[in-house]
Image (tube, rainbow, N blue to C red; front, side, top):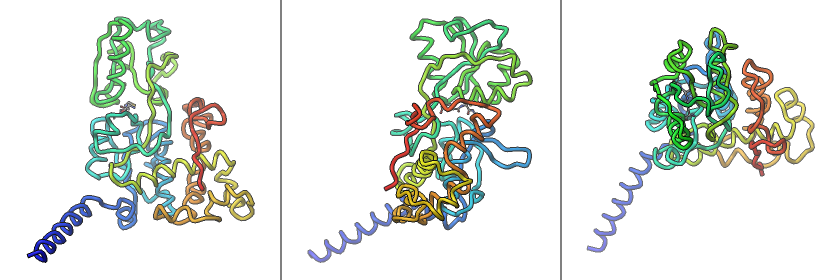
Length: 341
Ligand SMILES: N[C@@H](CCC(=O)N[C@@H](CS)C(=O)NCC(=O)O)C(=O)O
């Protein structure tokens, strides 16, 4: 009798374990078997996630996907990019259609805790801003009292807009759109007095206007928008792979390791920190299921964070954004390279 119960219990435990196993897919193993990473990106946001004339994906958010692919495959092109709009971006993460989303998605408590997703890291600290036509003569957000404002649905943007205008007793009329494209077009066509989104998004969208100089981005930011990649909740290891891909790029910047000097440093550096970063000392990749030169691969193919920032959105790009909050912590910013040790 006892034996039967014990056997039944073992059988049950096996069933439960089996079910749990079926649910907890090891994302990194799946990516390795498939031979490429799947990455959810924007439909087209200059500087962050967009395709050039040759159909090649570029941008700071795209580079984080390239860093993950480089760490896994030593090849930043082993990626299938999936374009997502604001309404579809989280669904593709929840269903597992993409391994990671890397597309100006704000990390908030409800998204982090109630939607089956996790934000491994923040790759761009931002805030919400407003753009207006210069001819409107408005110089601050408070000057938008009574204005018509275009916004994208399903964003933190529309929630912050409501909060800010209510809290400051400002009247406004909102016109909301399913996609950014529609909202921006409506604004450019004069249907709204202002368009609002993350300030990085405004700078990027302005580049698409026929006459960018007719528009001005107002100086205030009305919210905090920590933007970062999102993954499906429940795979701590893959979450760590994405997190440390970004930290490797920050560490490299902090230590002065660049795409150009990484091979030379690999051959001759005696700095213990650099040697650990490049996989010469220690076995830091192993615990993640990656080779020990995982960070070397990232730096070799994608560069450090400062290099990626400059060429995509910073001084070396058409956007020309200042480092601001995205400077290293040692330069007064928020980007902090956690130690590899
Ligand atoms: N960071 C905000 C806003 C992000 C967002 O979706 N912004 C718009 C404006 S840049 C967008 O990406 N729209 C693209 C689309 O819907 O195709 C959020 O996560 O809710």
